[in-house]
Length: 270
Image (cartoon, rainbow, N blue to C red; front, side, top):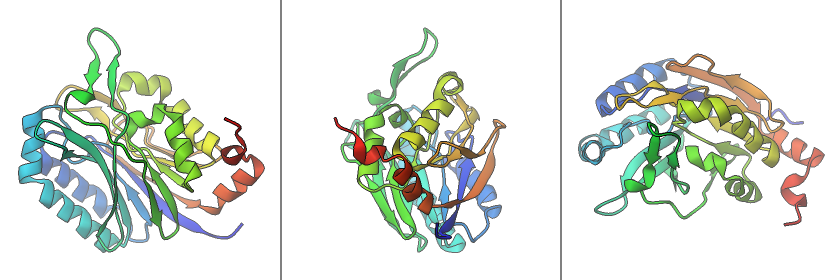
């Protein structure tokens, strides 16, 4: 196996409805990230965490440009690619899309992915979510071709739809990004099992930066950001439900080695 090692960092955040507060939080975290990092991954809803249209529009009108200027400058400063887990973007006059971005190490936007599977669930009488009320579903799967490997992009609830990840693997993805704001209820039951399953069944690394803690709107997210190898081993995990950084080195050549051992991405019959 070649020594094709790259450094991955995932930031675990407790984002709020206040965009400036979120930028300040990220500034503090980026100060702790070394400049030899190849990819820095941020969670879903990292720039603004809210279900209210007026608060989303406030971000888009007043803070979107400054947020992305900040991300671009950090990519250049750290000489790192950055995955922005998700930020709302206008789709039409009544709805948004939940969009994930990749910026390259020159600070330029490289790829975007709009969340395909929207989180419409009824967990209990007191816990219901209806993402499609404010958001339109994406239509395209996206693989970002980075200098050291191919990254298949997804967001949070996509995790429960294995066919999406099989398509990404078939398109050559070596890594799968799954930025999330998983609820505490579903996270404690399913997060670890689903993340490891997506890695194992596709022979891919999985990068899963997550939201944690209690947010302005009362929503409680699970945290437990993880980086998992193609064999399903959790390489590093944020085990404390608070803002923090996790990082590890990975060898992208492990993807080919694992797929030689278990060729399930090419061997299936249906």
